[in-house]
Image 1 (cartoon, rainbow, N blue to C red):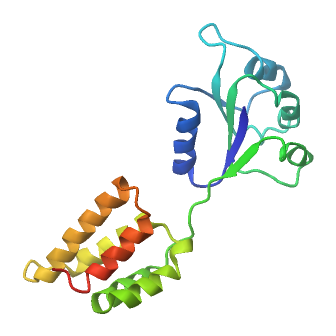
Image 2: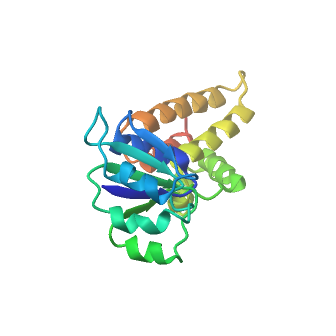
Image 3: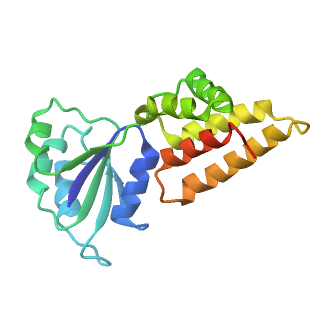
Length: 201
């Protein structure tokens, strides 16, 4: 198995690598590799393991070895190429793109803070309208980051003399736990929170 992972979301890519390769795998930086090194990586077993799990960093950035990848697609090992950039214009890319899995891990676009705060403030007056506003941006946002911004705004407004602000923070704390542990769709949890804070009893 060979897979190529690329993109700027290294956390998600790292989690996927651990799912596929486990906790113990070889890591090889490819900057100084030559063609002579490739048979040892792709074909050879080690003394400890006949079936190797290998992470290759920036393989495609090395112009000597990248074109050789086409010769090793039938490797018996589990190998992931983790690429900072992947040039889709190259001949090699065109040769391999339909023969192995290429997965891009992109960070979500930057959140518009004013939009998040606007939805939060609207929710305090009218939860249903806030949910409608949220649904327009759900496809381009991340629910955990969105909730983090809600929490930051709620902390700014917190007053020990205002019971409503205390109740909202408690609900945000519960939302945060649920987002990390529940199997319910995360946006449904956020929507439920927005409906609740119109009347945080």
